[in-house]
Length: 128
Length: 177
Image (cartoon, rainbow over the protein chains, first blue to last red):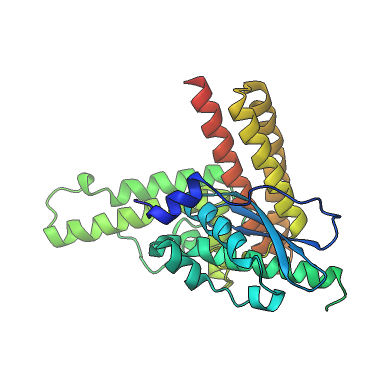
């Protein structure tokens, strides 16, 4: 299967790979996994006092499309409020990366990772 | 004799519908059925009869492949129970479980990059033990309990472990080769 140029770009030059310290102020972590292919994705967001996502990191074990999807969302969530980040849809990710139908689940995983990270933040901060 | 294509796989082989399976009985039943439906064993068949027999042979082999592998057998049992295991849709595993998966994957990758066969073999061993534990839990849940939702979660866990096993085996065979 041929990957699109954008997938290859994110795969070869992934943005924001790595981790924040779990206990760092404003940091929240979303962990998701896709049983069908065994992909595991960790997305961390660092939220400022104004409720805006300042920075993001990811670590993904999976195929090129899963890595590209998570790399892309680390770029997209930056500068967004939590609610704005939640409006990112897997269809937008799939469209941006020109994912073929069999790889749509990778974009779903990335969308779910954003939700998991935001949920984690809200849980840590008393549902604000 | 012909095979009733509408039978579920357990009934097809005359086995109880359970996760815990008598493997020797499964093997025997498979060989017996396979002999019956093998088109080469029957001369003087019309092309229609031959076609039906091919279909039956395929069904028998598919049934055997499904019941033989614990993971496929568990998925099939859930399907018979009408439970969606959420294999393609459920991404929300327990965070601790996913964190551990990530650590395992990191360990496999590190060992692979370092060409550390000992480390990979140790990982493979730990993985086999873990998969054994999870499979035992699955048997309790499927055959003893009445909580198919919990069994579905265990099936999903087993799928991640299976992926890890394949990664570890691939890494080992790449180093051996």
